[in-house]
Amino acid sequence: MREASASAKIILVGEHAVVYGQPAIAVPVSSLRAVADVEANRPSGQGLRIVAADAALTLDSHPDNPLVITAKLVLRALDAPAPDITITVRSQIPVASGLGSGAAVSTALARALSAACNHPLDNETLNAIIYEVEKIHHGTPSGIDNTVIVYEQPVYFIRNQPIERVIIGAPFSLLIANTGIAASTRTAVADVRKLYETQPQRIRAVIEEIGALVVKARQAIETRAFVQLGLLMQQNHRLLQQLTVSSRELDTLVNAAMKVGALGAKLSGGGRGGNMIALVTPETAGAVQQALFQAGAVSVFATTVE
Ligand code: PMV
Image (cartoon, rainbow, N blue to C red; front, side, top):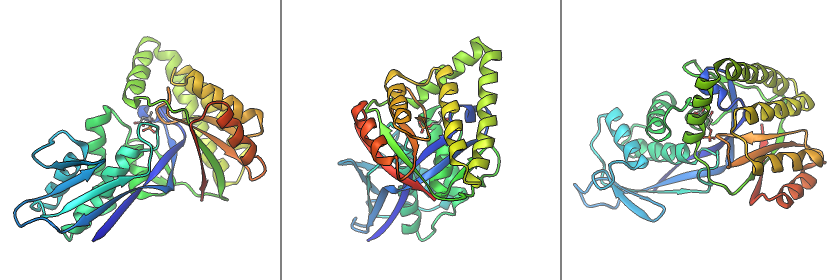
C-alpha cells in the first residue's frame, strides 16, 4: 500500500486583492493533512476506484466530481490508462472554511495516482492540474490555494507570476478559529467583483492598499517584526470589511482576540464565515484561545509558521 498526502493552508494577508493581481502571502498548515492510500486490489481491467467520505466513485460514475476530474487530468498528463487500483482519500481538514480542503484532497489523490502509475508528477505539472480543478469549482480563483498546498512552503504569490518563497525570520504562532459558518468563497469573490464594478475607484484603492500592506508584511516576517505584522493584519481586516467579506461573527472573534493581547487578528480566506487567524505569543496564546471560544469559535487550532 502506498500513501501520499498534502497539507492544509491559511492565507496570512492579501486574500481577495490577490484575485486582482496584488500579492498575497499564504502558509502551509502541515499538521492538518489530506491523505490518499493506494491499494492494488482491483481485478484486471476494472480500472480506478476512488473512495472518499464513504462514497465510491469511478471515472464514469461521477464525471463532475472534483476527485474524478483530478484523476482524469492526471492520467491525461501521464498519457496512461487508469490503473486497477482503489485510492481512498481521508482528510482532517475542515471543509468550506478557508483551509484549502478541496485543493489538498485533490493534491493527495493526484500524488497517489501518479505514483501508482510509476510517474510521480513534478510540482509544476501537479500545480497546473490542481489549478484546473480549482477553476471548475471556484469560478475565478487566483491560484494561491493550489500553489501553497502543492509546494507546501510559505509563498508570496502574485497571479501569473513565478512563486516566491517567503523567508520566515523566526517562527511565529497563529491561532486559527472557525466561526462554524460554511461560506462560499465563490460567492464572496463574485460579490467583490460586483462591488468593484459599481464603485471602481473606491474599490481599486482598497485593493491597492491591501497589496501595499502585503509587501510590508513580507518584510515584517523576514525581519521578525511581529508587532508590525500584527498591525498590518489589523489593517488588512479593516480593508476586507470594506470589501464586505467580513461578518458579524468574524468581527466578534477578531475583536475578542485583540482585547486579550493578540498582536493582530483578521479573517482568512474567502470570508463571510470560515476562519479567522490571530497572531499570538507564547504568553498570550492561552488567553486568546479562551477568548475565542467564549466569543463563539467552534474550534481553535494552533499552528506555528516556520
Ligand atoms: O477561501 P479560501 O481560503 O479558499 O481563499 C480564497 C482566497 C481568495 O483570495 C478570496 C480567492 C482566490 O482565489 O484567491
